[in-house]
Length: 125
Image 1 (cartoon, rainbow, N blue to C red):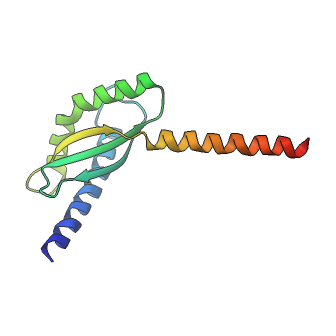
Image 2: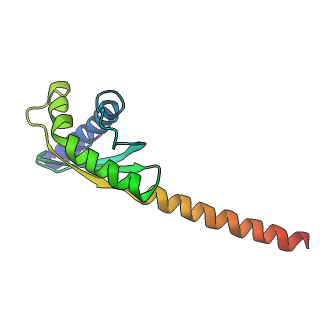
Image 3: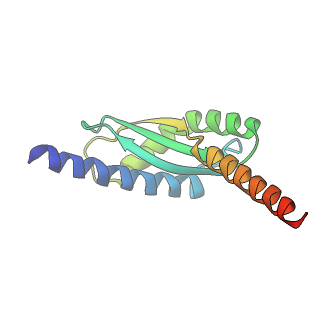
């Protein structure tokens, strides 16, 4: 029973952190290196000491790298703001991780579209 309760707590904390960090990035962080960043998911450790923040960036590899540097630089600022906003005793250490799954999805979608276009051309011929 106890593990089930802690699982729910980590899920709730993950959702809350995801929502708050998205808001902080939108309204509070002024670092020009952080571009079109989307928080895709948050995983919080069972003891709530670490939060893995997965994010995606729309743009070039340079924009990915710039955003990564900006997020690393802003992590302690974001953590302090979370401490003021969240009603939990200890704010987890934030670890920002690039999530390439959206890029992969776009790539697969492009390949499927290309195959359909080729099939349509063959059918028209």
